[in-house]
Image (cartoon, rainbow, N blue to C red; front, side, top):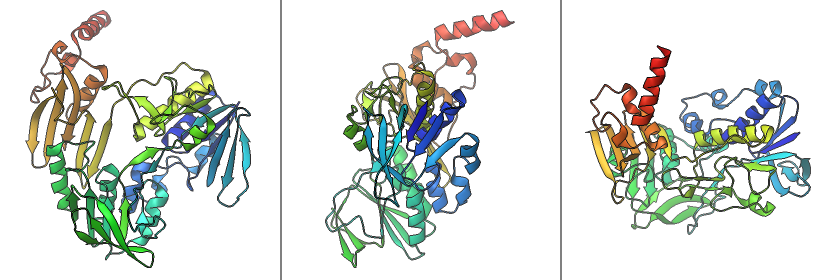
Length: 433
């Protein structure tokens, strides 16, 4: 069998590892536009602020690929998938003519691309304009900043705030701009966003919310100022675009595979072609809570999908990837945030229960129709695993023997399970005794 994996991030490397555990003899080739072997993308901001050494960013050391007989082709871009002939055309950065690789089973795990809005006066080839999705982005940005740099970040989501944190102690000032009325609007409600924003403002970060960049001024192909929709003008010698990502669908679309918001896959992560699988940020999944198709750009989700895809590619379709829901665990300047599921407390019929709320701490549960559907926790992790399981299992809260909104209740134990499951486990325990 010839296994070919396009992409070498979380989904790709976990697929390769899983294939090798199931098939010790067949060839595995990973091909990627990236310059580096698989690294932890969530770590690139920590490289930026010198919290980790370059060698610590990698997912595996070089011996891993040799030991597991995985061939890696870096700096190589796949141009076309020929489904009928089961081959790909690709070229390297040093060659302009195409090379060919054949496959028996193919995995597409090429992730997402940054959204690049059209802004008057802005050319994305300017040397002081950056995105922040890759280790290479982090290296280029780090080599460009100085102590006197005036940094403007467009986007107050996870990516924008992590790069802000990475730069705050290294440059003169950092200003974050976002069209929303709060930071991390997809992950936090207003109250929790206010806590995080104030905490970040105490670390040399300024915010301009409910505004956008309408145009930029430039001199000698460098951005020098950004003009906001409010009319404010901000001096700028480093501009970072971080308003979000879109799944990389072009390769699948050109090949004739079915795509929507992401590449369409079945429960086995198989595309509309039986010999081609897809996993990670480029894939469309079912949201457990809304039952709608969505794209989850999450490292843990990509890693899990890659493992399942690799198992199915090598063993036949028997391992299913089920519905999921949004989850994030992140920290800024030592303030830890956990959020999951539905966080928007303005939605109709949501019962929001705040069990703890201080200037630097929050625990809030969102309940709908007798089900826990989301939570936000800041500097608090008590029972986070329990809450996550209740959401995932869609447990009826009335079936529990304790009130989850009582944060002081220390007697949990079997009471965290539904009535039926609790009886089964207690009966099982009695049999063991």
